[in-house]
Length: 261
Image (cartoon, rainbow, N blue to C red; front, side):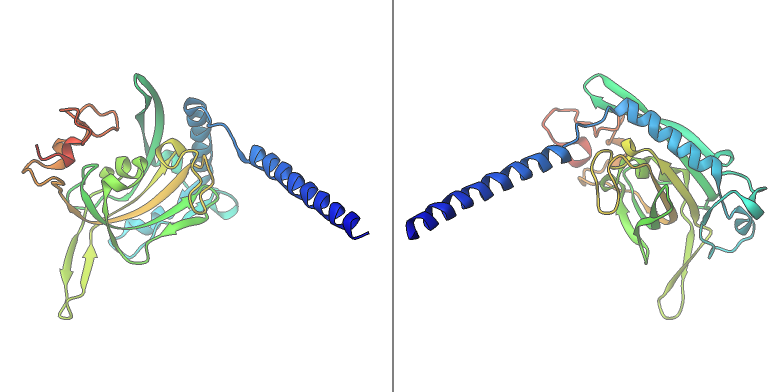
C-alpha cells in the first residue's frame, strides 16, 4: 500500500504540473495581442477624439476675465448646458506626420485648445518648461496630475505633449517678501491627442493600451536649452527634417542635440 500511495502521489503531482502549465500557456496566448496597424488606429482615435470634442465644452466663460486662478473644466453638452459652444469649434486641429518605419509615415491629428494665450515666449519642442498639468482619458478620469508646478524637459515627454505645448506662451511672475513666487498672465490650454502621439499599444499605469489622451496645461516659464553645451540651441539641432526623430547628421548614433562634436 505504501508503494501504491507513493506512485499515486507521483503521478498526481505530474498531472498537476502539466495541467497548470497548459492553463498558464493558454492564458499567455489569450493575453498576447498583435500590434495594431498605426494607420487604422489613427482613424479610430480621430473619431473618438472628435466625438468627445463635439459633445463637450469647457468653462470658457470663466476665462473672459483677468483671473489667473481659473482651471479648465470639461463638461458634457446636455440639459442646461445644451447651448454651450462645443470644443470642436474652439480647438485648432493640425496634422503630425509620424514615421512608422523607414519611408513609411502615418498622419496623426492633434487638437489644441487655448483658454488663455499667455504673454511670454512659446517653447520649442526641446525646451524646458515649468508647468502644472493634468492627464485625462476620454472618460474624464485622471491618470496623472502635478500638485505643484514641475520642470519638464520636453524631449522626455510623449510627442503629442511637446508638439502641442508651443501653442501656449509663458507668463510673468513676482516674488513676495517671503520669497514665494506668484504667476500671472500665463498660458492655459489643453492638448487632445491620439494614442500614436501618446503611448500607443503600451499600457502605462491607469492608461489602457491604444488610448487617446488629454493634457490640461498651465505654462508658467520657458527655458531655452543647449543639451550638449556646444553653444547651439537644441531647437536648432533637434529635428530639422521634421520627421519627429532627432537628427543625427554624422551617423554616429548620437543625436545632434546631444552631440557636442
